[in-house]
Image 1 (cartoon, helix red, strand yellow):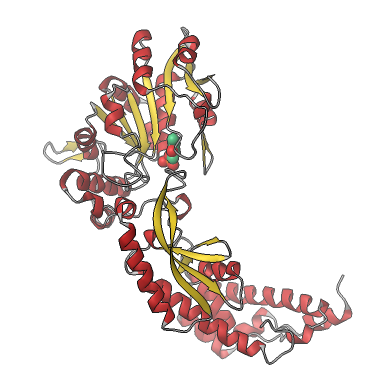
Image 2 (cartoon, helix red, strand yellow):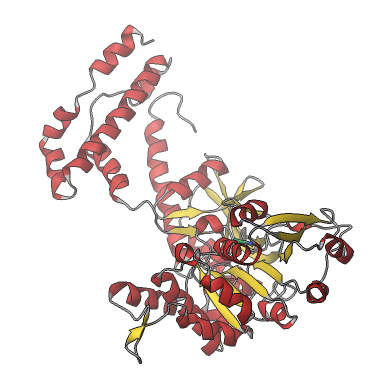
Amino acid sequence: MKTPKQHEHLRKIPSVDEILRKPEIQKLSERAPRPAIVRAVQMVLAEKRRDLLSAADDAHAGEKDSSPGVTLSQVEAKLQEIIRPSLRRVINATGIVVHTNLGRAPLADEAIACVVEAARRYSNLEFDINRGERGSRYTHVRELLQELSGAQSAFVVNNNAAAVLLCLSTLARGRDVIISRGELIEIGGSFRMPEVMEQSGARLREVGATNRTHLRDYRDAITEQTALILKVHTSNYKIVGFTAEVELRELKKLGDEFHIPVMYDMGSGNLVQSEIPGLQEEPTVQDALRQGIDIVTFSGDKLVGGPQAGIILGSSEYLAAIAKNSLTRALRIDKLTLAALEATLRIYYLDPDYCTTIPVLRMLSVSAAVLKKRAQALVRKLKKHALPLTVSAMQDVSKIGGGAYPAQELPTWVVSLEPQGMSSRELEQKLRTGTPSVIARISRERVLLDMRTLFPEEADMVANALIALFNTAGSRLHNGCTTAGAST
Ligand SMILES: *Cc1c(COP(=O)(O)O)cnc(C)c1O
């Protein structure tokens, strides 16, 4: 129910047409099509209506912006929101290198160049240039993957979830897959192993207990119906304490005894043995294949540091069957992804400095000493501006990734921000919703900017964002002080 006062307020709001007729609003048509301007005006008016209703409810109504008039800058601000792309760059100051919500792996420059090239013109995507006849898109990465991993054969699809689905559908449709209860994983974005299995038509045969599974549990579950033994790398959690899992080598021996293939969903895909801190203890793709695992699957955009893709490696026999599955047509990798994947794999193959060329590996391997210097430089810059903010550089830990090893922590340096006159939650929100959007984390009432995931040019962008934020916030606070009840 609206009160008479609210009615009176609402009546004062101009109509869409009235606003559109104003000369300064009409001039906006030089910058945006009419439907976008109309939409912007509607959005401003909807906000006005909401504000007026709440202001009329409020004892301090006079202190709020309850003017029914619509200004050019209000419409421009909404127009800006409408025009700018929904999918846009953010600055990742979380320190989480493989951040699924922030797009996982940023690509290497060479990979980006190859994507642009493939996008702009025609390519030999499925064309054999030497023979002048139809070719296969998979040839562009097959040999590279074989060389890098030592696998007999390779195949790629759209993502690792698709890779698992395709393998299970090919090798175990209508039959049993044995998997440890400790490995029935769920990964953000609704990848649940039991559900993927159901989709593939394979039957789940869980063995062992959540914390302990023994070789005899697998052995006891084997029947005529068993098509596959599946091991899953629990990449997004760790079971600690009283635990037991069966080694790959033993699983492979068991599989051989019963002529059952063994598949390993590695998830994050640590491709080659490297000196990168935090990764030395992780199983590598090469190791798994050396132990005779028949099929290995992993993502292209986790530790590989390439585009979203699902990589399947293993024995020629099984890979040939997988490639023939008609599902491949639905799950196939597109040409832009393929261009980025080939380029990324070429860096591994040809560039001895691949650990610095590939951004994910560079961010994981950067030393705490370097991060400390960067944090101190940002602190110095911010201190020059006398912002209402306590700024300091401090030691902390960053995580490798929501999509890779959340349990794995690396020592890092952060810039800590303690704002005056607003809460840390408010500051975090202002940074996040600003342009560019800066994603930080909050810890113990401080906003933390982790230097690990900032690109070199981004430290300045963050500094400028903070300076701008406090300048406008400052002026607004100042205006607020002329009326009673403004926050101080
Ligand atoms: C990440 C992950 C997946 C899903 O991979 P996507 O590339 O995101 O589809 C599947 N299995 C494991 C073990 C994973 O870590």
